[in-house]
Length: 399
Ligand SMILES: Cc1ncc(COP(=O)(O)O)c(C=O)c1O
Image 1 (cartoon, rainbow, N blue to C red):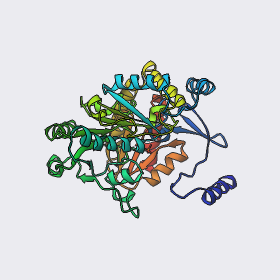
Image 2 (image 1 turned 135 degrees about the vertical axis):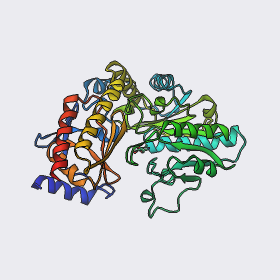
Image 3 (image 1 turned 60 degrees about the vertical axis):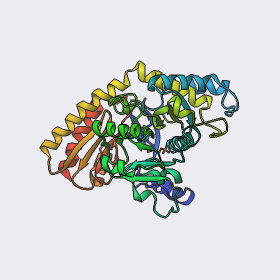
Image 4 (image 1 turned 90 degrees about the vertical axis):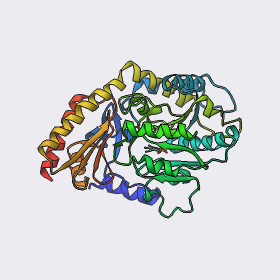
């Protein structure tokens, strides 16, 4: 480890709260699908800031949109109307088929808004004292107190108790257990179409339709967390569109403003009738700068056909990684995912392979200890993915 990096690491440890297990990597700049360290060494970015920089790094069109807007209007608070926020809500509701949007600043906040809306809808519209949300084992919904209570992974809750009440977690893909958990207290069920932090686990179409049917049968809300799967990541603009689902509430964040903090809740008109002026708010949510950037992101996704690209490259490289598994069945247990949200589950902890890949100039991520997770910008080239596939096979052969 060189002196500059050791010094930065020591300064970070002295000045920044120790919440992150960081990679041994200082990133100084980025362009398109490459990250550069301070010596100019390039890394192919297969992580996109955890499914955020979907349109690629340091884009002039996005920078220009933000710059122009910053010279016009940066912030008004949500006490005033702005064209930019309303335009974004119109585009997102048209593209999703939902009725109304609420804007915030992160994924966890979008989920908080969804849960608040579900509870308030039940009480004010349905006149039912229903507040509980059912979630799945292995899910991840964010790090606020409410969302660690919602998340189906024990490790995020440790030492933070007492947690807010009103969340029940049921086993993965078990509709019997799901129905048994529904009671007069239940306000809704929240699922991810592909569990991201949970190890890149796609739920089956049958299961998701089963959950939707339970929501209709018991007259409760169907919530889909699209924070990681949204905005083209899985090869459709929203993951739920793969399965023709009709959720009542959908949350998104990550890729929405390509790296500027922004989250959104989309709701059917019916569900959205649970909110009233004063019932929920945030100072920064849906500000003009992030709104114009998000509008530009949606325009780029369409113009550059990045959603289709995600579907096509995702299928091609899933098949490519499966070929490697056929050659190295003792090293790769499974390859799964949708679009450019791919997980390569190894038979052993993935740390040593991850390190070799980093040395070879590829940055990906490990989740659930054994899963190499790929979430590249949707602009990634086939050549970069092919180079990664070769490096992966070499790294797996070496370890
Ligand atoms: C599915 C899902 N939900 C919620 C979150 C939380 O989003 P944020 O970190 O923006 O609060 C994440 C973040 O990884 C996520 O993947």
